[in-house]
Image 1 (cartoon, helix red, strand yellow):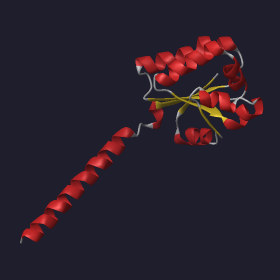
Image 2 (cartoon, rainbow, N blue to C red; image 1 turned 45 degrees about the horizontal axis):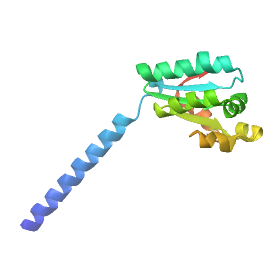
Image 3 (tube, rainbow, N blue to C red; image 1 turned 120 degrees about the vertical axis):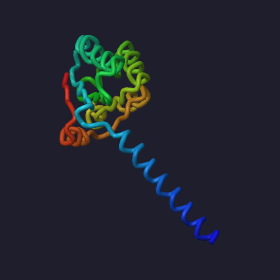
Length: 142
């Protein structure tokens, strides 16, 4: 009898644990329409300061999006690697919780991949941009 009770208790604990884990995972996944991907490709410093960084920072501070990813693409990779003031801004953006990624093919072509990685940027091939689009995320380009 004690063995049957123990088995029932273990099964109940397992079911409750599974339900809790499923609930936590379901809650952590944000709907695609609450996710923003900003693709920054401009080598123009003013675009970086007055548009990209300003919007990213305000969006994060004001909670306008549940999930923000900034993608450094093309000429912006070179600009960021060479401009210390922009590097300070990108560090504060990362520290605020924005995911910052850079296109590896682009940053390799400029010879700046290692420098971007040292800034805390995730440098990788960005075929996932296609996934973001197919997922229905909001895409903003500068």
